[in-house]
Image (cartoon, rainbow, N blue to C red; front, top):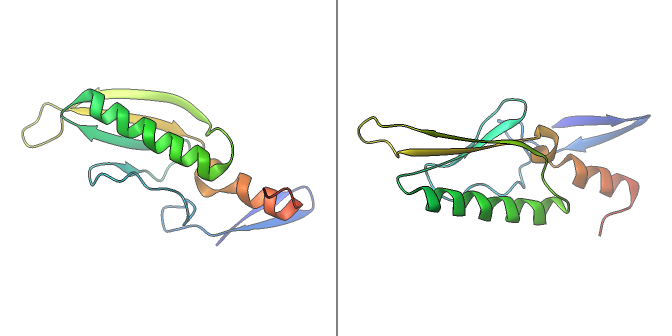
Length: 115
């Protein structure tokens, strides 16, 4: 558990070992993942760029629905890996760690603004 302090109020968050909410929708493909750093990169890898972009967009829509507000994405990074046996494209969404931890949900619950 982690805690988010808001003025004199403390809010509990249920976080997994990576520090994100246990309820955060996870990217469904085995090659996609959420990293554990500030402005966490959420990675989508595929040999087909449109497929990686579609998966990232689907995850972003699902996460915004779960969060109840737009996810704070500060950058989208596109890279490639031409090594053998690796997906060629690597799309990363750099997301606010508080959003991925579910802080806006916990704050709404604590203030009674839960929809």
